[in-house]
Amino acid sequence: MPNSASASKRLRQSKDRRDQNRSVRTSVRRQIKKVRVAAAAGDVETAETEFRVAAKKLDQAAAGNVIHANAAARTKSRLSKAIKVAKQAKS
Image (cartoon, rainbow, N blue to C red):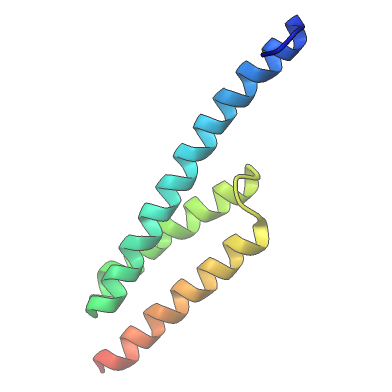
């Protein structure tokens, strides 16, 4: 339990930020899964469409320090690689 007014305020702010960051992180994970599922199924068009949304969400999460910038870049790279593999398997 916080003992001062400023500590109480910090606790409230922390909870609010935690809820917001959780929401962003969950949204990003959901979008990444959509790309991976579409790529695994061989649906390249859907995978590419979902990838654009995922890349934007990853960049926004990195900009807000929800995830590390390098983690966002690494994830985008791996997703685009999965899409390329799906394209080659299709043709």
